[in-house]
Image (cartoon, rainbow, N blue to C red):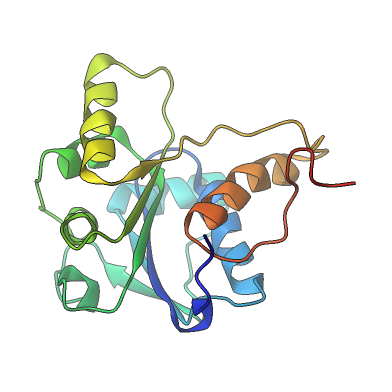
Length: 194
């Protein structure tokens, strides 16, 4: 179900130390291009995410409107409290370390605290793990998060739209994330496109 008031929505995007910065980069680009983009996108990067972003994209992360970067080491952010009006958090890519800390209630940084807030307030929490293969601890942590109300959306591209480039392939995951976040999105849909 799409949220009819997408224009006034405020969301959080956390980028962790897993490989897959391209997913976060394309997600930010696509969110800004939507017919009804979010009013605000708060971005949190872990220290390792900054290093991986540089290695995988060739440049430093720079937040531009409507995105605003917040320090992962500080809780001085509105979405660290349940009283905030941020309604969705996307963790993309999600490392297994971050996933495990959230699953076990360890709110030791802004990413984990914000995820805790989303769960306790029954708001959308979309976790996009970028790991293969999963061990039993990973699976148990994702099970706990699913039972707590999170959506686990592995960064598993689809091929039925016949993607021609790496960007096309990445967008199959990004479009799925945007759908799960409740935004109106014009994308390829199995057996619906002519």
